[in-house]
Length: 274
Image (cartoon, rainbow, N blue to C red; front, side, top):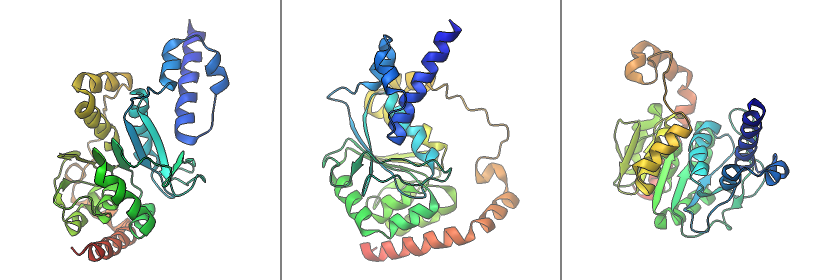
């Protein structure tokens, strides 16, 4: 029995790796198993929601992995999209391989998603190809979404004007430059725009989106599968909890990066005529 549990865990990990890195890890072994639940995780129904998740150099891997895990368990048709199919770097040194180029990405999507990562975010905010792609797909997508500083990229593409939104706490003051209204919540939903706060809010965002698309019971099922019941060792995850001294220290350490984000945001707002 213990051997079977270990084997199933290994197969599930292989499926997750294949989805996130493009490497067919354990694919051959998985194809041989008679375990139907394992096979079904790999099979995408033809009518599955189409999800395009932007990946880009210097992104934060966890911004992507949390929502991606939930979407894959839901058997959504998830594609990792970038300009080309060369591996992109992440903050933790694990590369992510795009599965589609901008040109290959479907014109009509159920979900368009942008993760964060301040250095990569700044580059995207200054990249006409990225902004043109997002503006085009976002115009028709059923849901336009982000986590962390990915909200700034949506804003720079003109996709948050007139919407409530949030982002990573150190840069939420930039959202009004794009015509957005900052709401201080972990996940903010305004019509078909759903934005999440920093990094770990990606799981909350994904569950919120799944509940909106497929109903609360499906979201509860995914939450239980992921055993998402956070009990942080410290009450320090927001500026309010951390207190002014720790907040000031972190802001000082990020001063250069956040200043770069402001310059990029102001330039984008000018291009948008805002």
